[in-house]
Length: 104
Image (cartoon, rainbow, N blue to C red):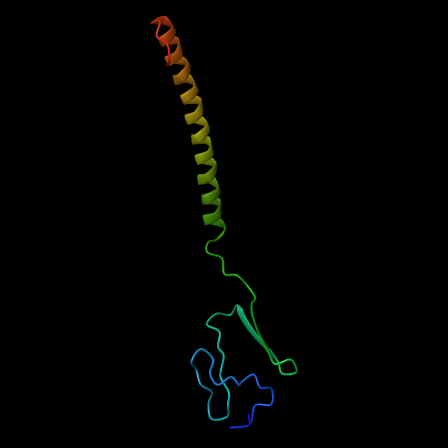
């Protein structure tokens, strides 16, 4: 990198990246903290491409199966509660009818 060169574009030059200045040769080192980050450069287009190449799962198959079972149990509980609500509503209506009460 040529230091103190004039800016031929008129757009200004990049002097820092997120307040990180280049070393004496004008280079800034980019590091990935995970194996899932790929950093590519293309000098001909002045492009830097950062790509996430994999996704670390937050849980494994065992945990996923447990979660699926919990969701299935929750769905069944919801169905059971709805059925109980319907039976209770029916019983209340029958009681109201037998007591000759309206608006229940």
